[in-house]
Image (cartoon, rainbow, N blue to C red; front, side, top):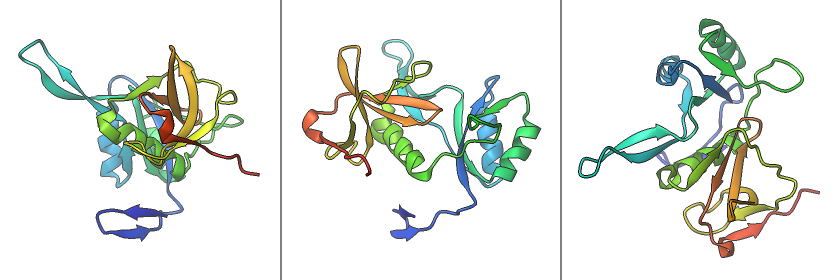
Length: 190
């Protein structure tokens, strides 16, 4: 279930739909996004606004926080058909033991979307090849400020304490500038 702010109601998510992470090749990420949306699927790309251009002629431009990555909410069957049509253009993140597409939990995806869209993604850093080990850090929840409600792990990176939020097996992003007083420890489930 999730809260729909537009209609001010609690809605049930379709149990047949799941989020999947898709890596897009050959600079075709916007075409793949458009194809998925035309089929009635929800998509998400983590974007940020950057000022581009030379001094005096700077203009805001939207760029991906995680290049070539798109998330698609769809059924397993639709995703398999989509993969067949775009065989050389996409890679679908799979579960480790087999080749089945790995669904992303709604809670995990909602948190990732919240963190990457807050403050236009300005405070977010993406770590591609260096998936930090989480066992050393403590799991925390942000209790105040822009990121209130976000959960992740605290880790020191380049002498700065950061909150790491992950979509397991896909991406890790780090948020800096969260005061310690805004964090509370999350107890492990027994």
